[in-house]
Length: 272
Length: 259
Image: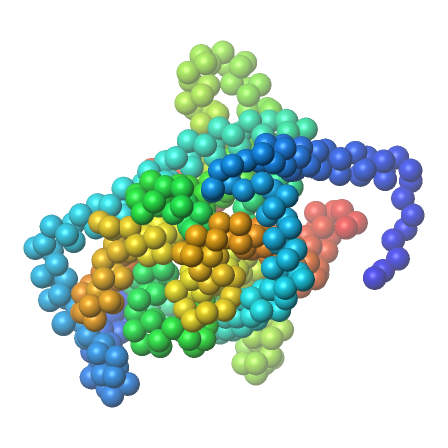
């Protein structure tokens, strides 16, 4: 961590006030739900206190985190990483080679237009319902947003830069590593953000259909056996999981694109 | 120069599509595909032709399209006005910021089991889940639209003494639309994925999702591929329709003027 310069008192106070403004509604909602559901006899909406108790029992004390959340996380990250590598590699090739990109456009447009969930039965037919199926589904469906954005990003490289690279006779790897990849990075990140959300959705649905294990399986299984309280705990944990992932993604994005923000701030005359 | 000519582009694209189909054709004959009974393009198309003659097929297409459209309309009806209102005031934006951030990261397909308990295996269930997924991008873009409403533009409109209707039609609406459009594009594509996903998980009769499951269960791979082709066509039509709309509605916007 870098040391932050100490802030004047006024600034930290406005930050506190901002935080309070952000916090009051979620807190009020939580309190309202707590009281509203406390006497609930409804089968579908159990009291919040019971959901929280069960959450503790199943996910924390009972080891549910290790049993279901960690495998889900590994699956998600592996599938997404595959999509990232595939999308950036293919996207760079298509972005550099305009003729190829134009020729392949009907194919890429068609593949991209398939709503991913529809591929699930086919994937299950070919790859059964194990880990291979889950990973390939996540990877295949999340490749498209990254691929399309990489094409756009690579194509936006300054033509002069291409001439410079050619006259310096840079090797293909150097061109990719030091010119195309950084130039396309902001676009790739924008695609990756969409892809990541898609990955989470696909992860949930393949787990619901696949072999036991993972949060998707837990929630669906709980519903099918009419264990409503465990189902709610699963939804709650998946919500927390999704939020944590989002925060993680934002941190990584900020780290990866730090130079880009600095450049943008610089060219706009600010001092970051 | 020659690259940009239309006939040349078309030749290339037809050739590439032909190659892809040929690859599919050949792949379906190899041992790898045979094990899983993968149909080639010819079998798939003839299965599609068979299906076109059945009522069940069109019913399924109709069910899915209806759920998709209603889910999307519902999320527009909720997301846009609420987003604009939230965006108008700094206080309301800050108050709802965390809530929206948290709620939108819950994968909506995870709510299918809950929706199934509440609404049963019905189109209503699919519509609710679809709306839960698509309302967020629309809401967030509408918040931006509310925040960035250009003050000068309104002053100009007022000094020209535009009537209220003209102000809405020629100043407010186009400006808001330009902000909301990216959200709508994301929502429209995502909602098809979520709609079919919810149909699969819920096994809702009279939808593409159900027919896909059925084709898989009865081991009819040609029908299965035909249904996937159908859903791909739906996806293409949605993308194409959005592009057409974008050209008609947002031709004036600098970001899209070129395309």
